[in-house]
Each structure stands twice: as structure tokens, then as C-alpha cells.
Amino acid sequence: MGLHGRPASFETRFALLRMTKSVDCKIGRHGEERPSGPPDQVRGSNHARDISIAMLALALAACTPAPKPAPTPEQAALLKPADARLAELYETSCKACHTITQSGAPMVHDQAAWAPRLKQGMPVLVDHSIQGFNAMPAGGQCATCTPADFEGLIRFMADQEGSAG
Ligand code: HEC
Image (cartoon, rainbow, N blue to C red; front, side):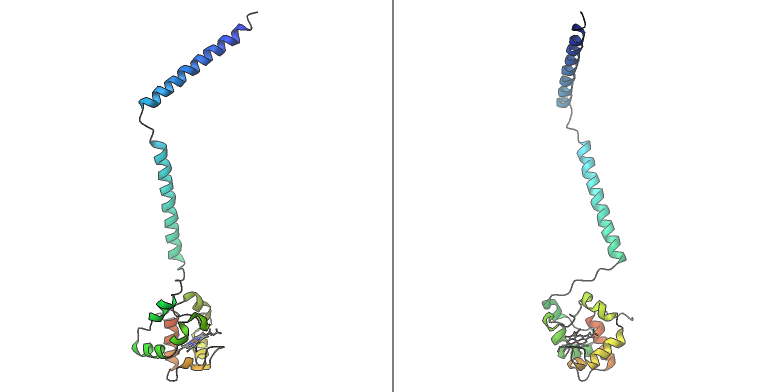
């Protein structure tokens, strides 16, 4: 029966076709420049993704100002109020504890440490400065500080200098 021959001849032709095709492909590959499209597109999309992530980060930073990191003890030691009188009062009182992490005092310009304290409201903070609060001594070792001075010193330490609220 010729049934056995047919598939064989089909297969042979198919095999020949595949061979010529693969030869064509090889020639094609040698003849052409290396395709540069796909890798560039991949790189391009990575760039686009990086940029959109960066823009998202910027947008988020603009919406919710992240608290500045707390100053190092070295940085904290160099900070002082802009106002000359407050600077002098600060240097001779608050600074002794509020630049030393181990004192348990909220560190000067450590926004994260001051944020929950500020929530109590300025009158409470001034009152705690005058009356004392736990390890915080009454008057903060400042005999000549007025309530307005305490407020100014607290604003400075909480990094709120110049803000009216
Ligand atoms: C002898 C160390 C010391 C000195 C000096 C000092 N403080 Fe403090 N202060 C502390 C400590 C410790 C705390 C934390 C108390 C707590 O939360 O238990 C504190 C906390 C505070 C608070 C937060 C109170 C609250 O209700 O959360 C304010 C405000 C403050 N101090 C203001 C001042 C001011 C203003 C001066 C300078 C005039 C000053 N401190 C000087 C040790 C000191």
C-alpha cells in the first residue's frame, strides 16, 4: 500500500523545508545588524519606571513633609536660637540636657521627639517648663526665664522657630 510512503515523503519535505528555513535564518542573522530595538525598549521602560517612582516619591515628600532625622550629638551641640537673648539663656540652661540623648530630654531639633509633646499645646509645655515635668527640673535651670522666653526656647528646641502656631 502506498500509505506508508506518503507520510514519509511529507516528512522529508517538511524536514527539507525546516532546513532551508534554518539556513535562511542563519544567513539573515549574519547579514543583519544585531537587533537593537528590544533591549532599548526594555531599558527605556526601566527608565520610565524609575522616573515615575522618583516623581511619586517627590510628590509624596511634597504632600507629607517627612520629619527631619534627629541631629547627631555633634550637630545638636552647635545649634542655638537665632535670638541673642534666647541663645544665651539656652546655652546656660536647656542645652545641658536637651542635647544629650541619655538625659531623657527630647533632643533639640528632633522633630519626631517633639511632635507628640507639641500636641499638648504650647501653654502646657510652658507650664511644664516652669513647674517641672518628671526628670525635667522646674524652670529648666533657668532662673531668669520669663514665660515668653520658655515659649521661644521650646519653639527653638522643637524646630518651630519663626512659626506663629
Ligand atoms: C537637667 C536637665 C534639663 C534641663 C536643664 C532642661 N530640661 Fe527640659 N527636659 C528634661 C527632660 C529629662 C525632659 C523629659 C521629661 C519627660 O518627658 O519625662 C524634658 C522635657 C522638656 C519639655 C517637654 C515637656 C512635656 O510636657 O513633654 C519641655 C517643654 C522642656 N523640657 C523645656 C525645657 C526648657 C525650655 C529648658 C531650658 C530653659 C529645659 N527644658 C531645660 C531635662 C532638662
